Amino acid sequence: MNPDLLLVFGGLLLFGLLISYAVQYSKNKEEQRGQIIQSLGFTPLEVSATLTERINNFYNWDESKPKVALNNISRKMLPDGEMYLFDMEDSDTEKQNIAFLSPELALSQFWIFPRIEIGNTTGKLMNKALVWVISKIKTPIDFSEVPEFQKHYIVCSSDPDSTRRFLDANLLQ
Image (cartoon, rainbow, N blue to C red):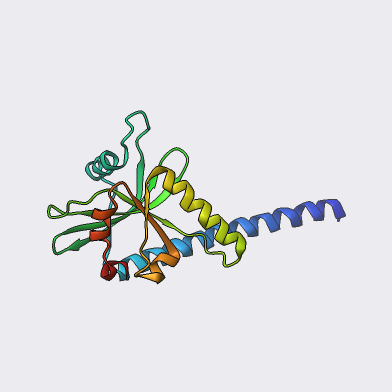
């Protein structure tokens, strides 16, 4: 048999195995995510036009921006409202989000950003740069009373006092 043909066949076989592994890995991660979400008491939902419109109205302050698409929606009923987990896709990013819907809840908008978890000097500089960029858009909020939360997340808001009242130490823990 021709060695070049054998090499091409071997390369195609290896490529096929890699694709198969990637697909299986993705399926396993998705199943694992679904199991975690269900163990937290969430129920998967079909995408509905009504919920998509409510979320778009909340997130799209700039009417010139295109509407977003929702995927992987799950809901958990709470005593005073509903909590949704969902992926939101716009033209350039996909974000994982949480939404609380309650007639008793009057919150200011706030954002939670994960800190970069690199323990060296580079990671610290990157986190400082992240806080600096965020501070140009909204006010970063200090939660030093809950150091474990502060270590992993940055919270910012245009109304820090209202956000602090909502995100009390019990909720952050």
